[in-house]
Length: 243
Length: 240
Image (cartoon, rainbow over all chains, first blue to last red; front, side, top):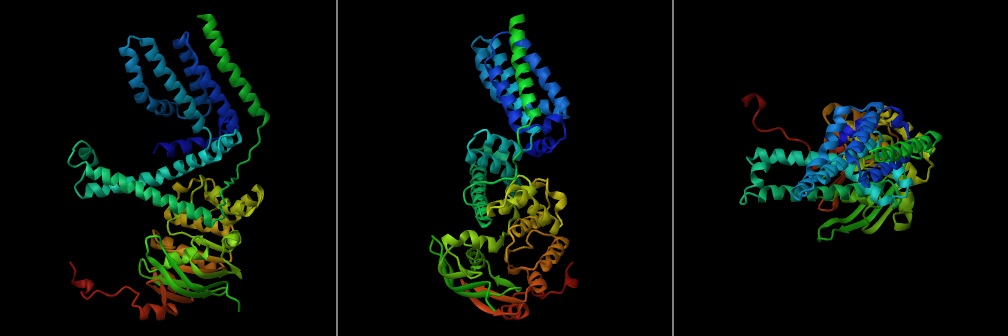
């Protein structure tokens, strides 16, 4: 599963892995803003940024092809909007849409692949992201695996009784079977949520989420943020001035 | 001797009208392990949830001399550790260490002390090597051990275990029984597993329709309620 792979990657030992989550998050945010607002000489700028991200992936010891492939998961979504732009006679806009979304996904993927989730959520919390929003993300991440396993069991049960999700989805008369599976899955997820809440209460939870993570922002983190800012903004300024 | 847990005339009815507990009286004394038997839906788990204040019915529940009330819940939950049947529900934090430290942090320990307590408890259940792992990377037996560690880290005086051997293979069950046998806390085992009860419990009670229908040694209860597996009338040698 994707998130298991990311979890394994995020527990590496590179310099990037050792940085504070806040430093990496700030760098990614700056990157996303600079990329999103880029208008001129986009092809050259994209090539520079792609080269920069590839260098970061290699430095972090992440599997290059694996990361590049996984970042492409956003392409089917943006392809729809790119096709609309293309049909409207704006090929450059379509290309920019695809390029920007891919590079954005790649940058975020590098962040989550180099930062264990507890550290990332802890960093985001210290940056002022609402605690409950982060709790939702944390539980979603934790129970995605459990729910997905249940979905696989239910699919196997459906197949064992001669059913098939794929065929039934397109058959109006048999659509009830996959719809029923989904409703049962939802009910089971709800039951899990209740079970988790009871377990939390039983261990003294009183509405305030306490965690072990409490890393301080070191000098190396500040240097990283400064360097990232200079490289990201500087690249755009140079490319736009040069072309 | 003062009982650790004292339940008097406990009644509980679910919102849909189902009467789950219908006048339960029970005492648990220091050092003893009590097996709780009964058919599915007889009220065993509902009873267990009352001991930790997760449900509150009519009647009284006293834990270590404290009545279970909204204002005593924090202390009660420190005294009574509840290990749920489905470990996946109990292991909700991203790493094993953080999960075990969840209870101590809620008790008010600072991060350093909570981490030290979590590491110590993981070592006690033989799971120190897994502290950095995500819970979904663990086997069923390991998850159960970590779930127990999460409870032990709160230093409870009473352990309530709901179907502790479910989902475990025989070696996993044996390892768990050995672990539980070494723990000094008084225990309540809600279980269908007669072998588990035989190995650990000094006393047993039998729930039927929300009441305690019988009390005695495990063997007495098993015999009285015919609660053991029966031999099939057709011998195994005749099956081909």
